[in-house]
Image (cartoon, rainbow over all chains, first blue to last red; front, side, top):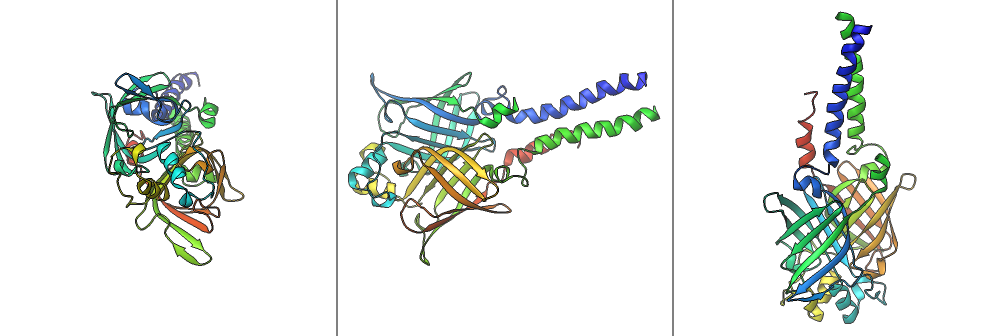
Amino acid sequence: MKTSNRILLPALAGVAFVAFAAVGAGNQKTGNLKQQLIGAWTMVSDTVDQGGTKVEPFGPSPKGQMLLTSDGHFSIVLSRPDVPKFGSNSRTNGTAEENKAAMQGSIGYFGTYTVSDADKTVNLRVEASTFPNWSGTDQKRVVALSGDEMTVTNPTPSIGSGTATLVWKRAKGARQTAQR
Amino acid sequence: MKTIYRTALPALAAVALVAFASHAGSNQKTGSLKQRVQGTWTLVSAVLDQDGKKSEPFGPGPKGTVILTNNDRFALIITRADIPKFASNVRTTGTAEENKAAVQGSIAYFGTYTANDADKMIVLRDEGGTFPNWTGTDQKRTVELSGDELKFINPNPSMGAGVVTVTWKRVKEGRATASASADPRR
């Protein structure tokens, strides 16, 4: 038995290691840029620098989320928390003022994405957007990662001129925490 | 040596099985409702039924996605395919007509979700989005799953009266297929 244990235990440990390394690959925080970006991100801030003048297009405490999936899909939704509710309670019966505030105070878009390690860029291929001009376009973003924070720079924001800087924080999910 | 193999091989097989069973848990198609709805879905159709009168609130060939993550987050976006582009090319300077067409032709929201197996229902907690009246609300959807097709049935749609049935199709996972080849048992 002594001899068999000497052979068995390292063998079992080896198999377990290989198997769990494969399991961990889907969640790892190191590795190529794409692997580091995969996940759910919530918005911290969105600032546009227009020739030295800084504006916050979604207000001082914007709400937003970016999902980057392991299968190459993304979705981004940003909104001001203070867009007035529609008096009719129906999305298709807003007044001109309600529609304007909603349009100016929010955006959503989705599609597929690719990542360039060399350029530290993400290319978002927008399949469709609530801002119709972005549907069918490629939106290129420069990304910088620091721990659980991601900074995304956009030189062509949907509000026109300026350079937008979006700061995102990795969302801590209940299930991910439970797994640790 | 023969004795060792008789003991070792079943033991190795058992360890491998346990390890891969836990891996499969994140992708499995059976199991709890929550496990089954997780993933990326693309829009097939959205149909509004108002007392038997059926219409397509996002027109023919609508675009959309819902993503339900394994850490309880979701995002849902639906748009008409034919919303006119803004002449200014700037989101914040649309005309009244452009704003109206965009708002009436699209919706996007995100937040956290829960799934209830007993009621076959998911609850989408709207944290933010393009329709302000839904922000901060719980959006309940009855769910029907059949293979790679998912239906959301919504008795309180954002356009007012009626029942909307939104049909989604599961996106094929390129990466999941690729990672299967890394299976050391092969």
